[in-house]
Length: 160
Image 1 (spheres, rainbow, N blue to C red):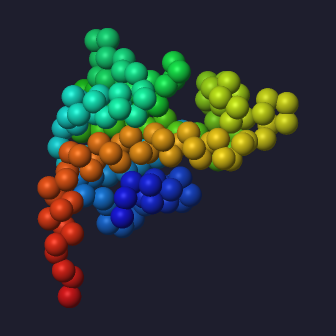
Image 2: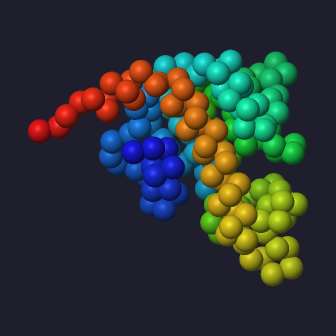
């Protein structure tokens, strides 16, 4: 079970009850656009930033927890002291599947990226999916790198 499956279920049903991916303590939908992933340990900010750069994002960390930025838009950020889960969390800024669920800010971004047609209000599902998958891939790469020993150990466990 990976983050994609769990996040898809959270987007679909609003919650997820089941086994979480290794290293993950919780996944929840904060708003229709924000998913919080809480890890069992503090987020390794250096590793998060390294992977974000490899994925083609820039990093903004001017006096606050790091944010992965794509064309001026925050796509993921490490939690800060004031957030539930604090620095054990990464927040993902994803596009919901309906334009009505988007904030004005996200609608503007979706329009600029060609995800939302401003005239018809229709969503280009292919672009939306591609954009969201890229963000989820960033955090899944982080999770697999951070918890590779746990993941390898769980693959060797046989369930009777």
